[in-house]
Amino acid sequence: MIQTWTMMMNKDLQMRVCGDPILRTTCSPVDEINDELRATLNEMVEMMRQQNGVGLAAPQVGITKRFLVMMTPDDEQIFKMINPQILSRSEKTCIMEEGCLSVLGGDNLPVYANVSRPESVIVEWTDENGERLSAEMSGVPARIVQHETDHLDGKLFIDYLSGARREMVMRKVRRHKK
Image (cartoon, rainbow, N blue to C red; front, side, top):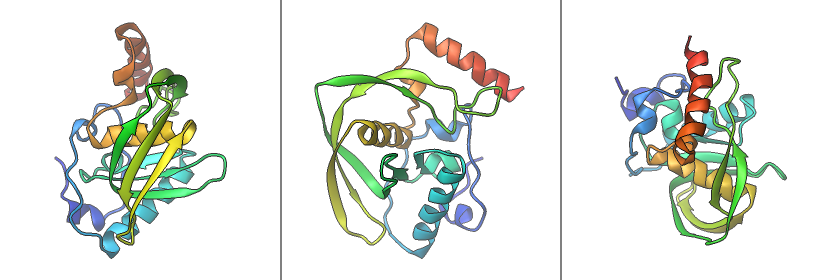
């Protein structure tokens, strides 16, 4: 059963893994920015760091609201994005290896696969102080924000793989569940 927003705020956040239906749920917009949301964003940043990740979206911790945290690997800049929207995507694409803290293999580590995505994006969001921001991101940061916003729409990186490649990844995931 999916816990409600307010119930989640009073409990420790729990990582959700592949197979949990919440990861396939389209999230609803955040209507109010408050101290509880800010505390959740901060806790998500800590979870992301503890797991050696570079991004974490609300449904990955059991919340069906549109917010995420991400970190640029080069300078470790943290973004806390509420109601993010990708306004445009470049026509030029690139292939990079992706993994996900919710798609784990038998060794309890993320499973990786090459995914093609637009090389750059323009994204707009509200920060934890209610300020509307936008940025053009390219390379790895563009990859991260696309991956994390996909989570808000119930999509996983494995959805971009060919049937055969997806089955190879899912075999590793099934080993995790045993």
